[in-house]
Length: 268
Image (tube, helix red, strand yellow):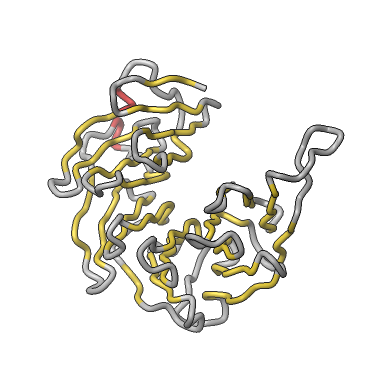
């Protein structure tokens, strides 16, 4: 259900329905079947692992979110849970946690999105309570992503909207909602990402659309789903290249598509 490169690119973490986050060292020799052996298994969640992200500039710590309503900070070297966020604590999520995003400007802070229709801000030094809870969505929060400046973050939800929140005040700054729906069915937002500058918000939808939003004006700049050779199924995930020059979208149509902002794109 999720995978992530370590900051150095030497390891990959992945997790899913087995409730385990597996770490693969890319420098390990392959096994007879050609696969890499698992170098570390992070066990402790009581539900599926929905999302994982390495702590920036560290290959030794990562944060996972889970269907058990919690997020966990792991020490990969020892395989031990350093902190558990939520669960028995009152200020934690009350339903499956679907996504996490670590603040690139302050790696002690991260945000989580959940089926309880909220996003929550956490400080890794204080696991017992969420710093702040963000309300506004009317459906599962499927995706959360910090804005490049670290002072804001975006969300994408089953209610068909993306939203921008201010970390410091807790206020909702913007709503990104498209009003053209077929048969009055509102497509779910499955995944989001910001451009390097933060001026653009990329949002993937359950109907195969991928909107490029102007974050300031809350207007659609482009719908990649309307272009020739676009996806024929639900957009399940998307991500930006490190230099911001290309976007990759993944879909239930079994394709990954790379969209280069120079106007060229290719299917792999």
